[in-house]
Image 1 (cartoon, rainbow, N blue to C red):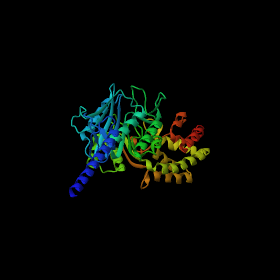
Image 2: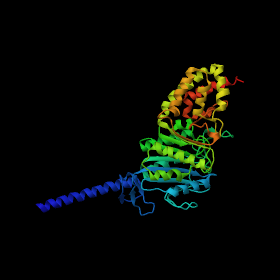
Image 3: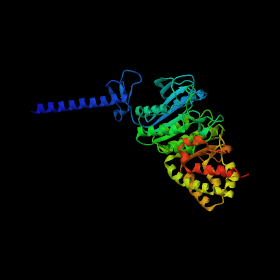
Image 4: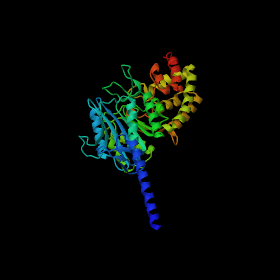
Amino acid sequence: MAKRGILSVLFAVFMMILMAGNVYAGNCGSGCGGCNNTCEIRLGNCSGGTCDPNGGGTCEARAVKDWTVLVFLNADNNLDQFGVRDVNEMEKIGSNDRVNIVVLLDREDGTAQKLYITKDDDMYKINSQVVEELGVYDMGDYKNLIAFTQWGIKNYPANNYALIIWNHGSGWNKNRELVFKDISYDEQSGNHITTAQLGQAMASIYQTLGKKLEILSMDACLMQMAEVCYEVKDYVQFCVASEETEPGDGYTYDAFLGPLTKQPSMDAVAVSKLMAQAYTEHYIQQNEACTQSSVNLGKMDAFLAKFDQLCAKLAELMSDQAVVTAIKKQVRPYTQAFYYRSNIDLGHFISLVQKNVKNEEIQALAAEVLALYGAGLDPLIAGNYINGYSMKNATGLAIYFPSYSLGSDYNKVKFSKTNWALFLSKYFAAASSVR
């Protein structure tokens, strides 16, 4: 009887192991596509499984780390040399047991590769593991941005994600040839990601994660704009970018990845501020003017509710020539502007309105807006880091204020539905008669 009992127990244990193995193999196989049913479980469940890049068809469940940093690095243009340099900066630090660094690199006149960044001291050659060869790849297609990010989330699971888009950028604007521009220009395909498409991409990533992406960072020129932030505010916690153009070298990746890998328990606000501050400290050493900020998008709705009130009141007062004159003569010309002169600093503009528009309601509303923008305890601008006299009035977020008209293309961005567009349309009509 005793032996039979022992055999029964052993048989039950054997069946449990067999069933568990089948469950794990089934989950891992579904997570890895072409892998076989051999599965190595490290930490967490098998849903993060990936195919062994070294072959053998082994499906391996990845550890859930503190952070995964995903870099969509579009160097398929005249920035190619800087892209290679930046990957080498990442390799100075490398991934570790708490942080993944993953790159989709597309080079000029070359093909695209997915790289898992490992530590390496050679600053002239990329030595990180090639996870996948993609061939000719369109980095200007927002669907490919979505696909890369979803792949990174699935294969390199983490508690927090930072997505960096690396390329030329222009915020919401047009260049001198009046070609609509935004971010991630692929010179082979001729495509780029529009502001509206960036919003669609973040919405898809939000659905994949089931929560907001912790950080969207844009290592590109002129992207820290109200129009851009508004497009992604419902899907992202923090946006890190520059109001001004960036020097060709862009981010100094080892400067923020080093501290992150040493202290991976940092939360999203701390990492977003670290990214912005590390960038600016580098260019302080180079004696180059620059801007970089972290915008807390969770505060944007509250800020915009009050900002909309201010804009509505300004629109109402466009029948008052004194108010129109003050904006045209004392506010707009002295507001901090950037490479595109139609990109002005939002915080500085509001400050000048408060100072120069002699209307008590406007001044009170401006004060309330500024408190939500950057002066309060938990403001929209989580961190603002600048260098250079020419950037002394940059407060962290730019906005579009052209000379004569918003143009029909502005309707393509969601921000056009705010009272900022109402105010400007009335201002342009009223200001034309002020000499």
